[in-house]
Length: 223
Image (cartoon, rainbow, N blue to C red; front, top):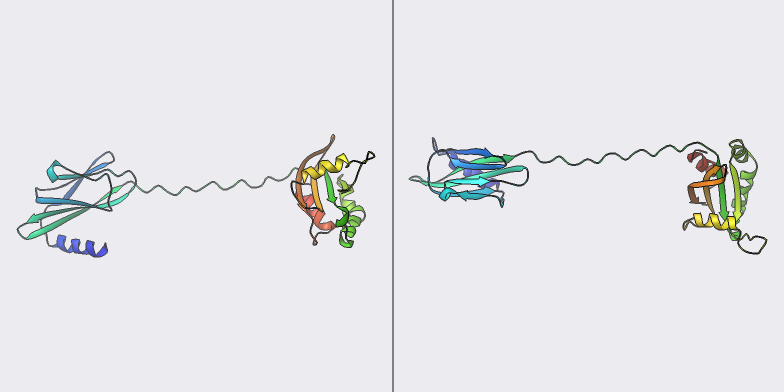
């Protein structure tokens, strides 16, 4: 393409006072015509565009692109000195700027309040490390924090049954809240006057968890 345009420029430089291409705008259409009559005119547009038409027996050309951009309209014609070329650039508007999505809203800060902290586990989950976590949540700084804030701690065994020998309704209700999370898991919910509100956070406990990390999860929910 560059070599072709350089060749065109060289030809045009030899034209002297030859005709020029004049562009007349009609809405979104550009009508291109030489400033003086020429012989054996041939038209070309680069890059190609389906809207390009040659009219009036080759005397004029029309370009009405459907999108913004720039095109070279080229007229080849014959003189006694041989074939000559005229080139003009047709531009329609500016390319549409890229659509920049709005930044996501920052995560809303949780409303401070009392929480229900539930740890749901299976009997076989109890290891020495997990037992130490339970002890630290029931006594010591973590336990004091929960008490001072008015939070309620419940450590529930998934195998618990009621007096009728059936699974404990409370355990069943919390198990349903797990949503596929593996046990042992911690669930943190709103504490309301009616009991328990919506679950604000939940996650599976890992070997790296301790009482302090569970208290940190409570704090993140505003507790």
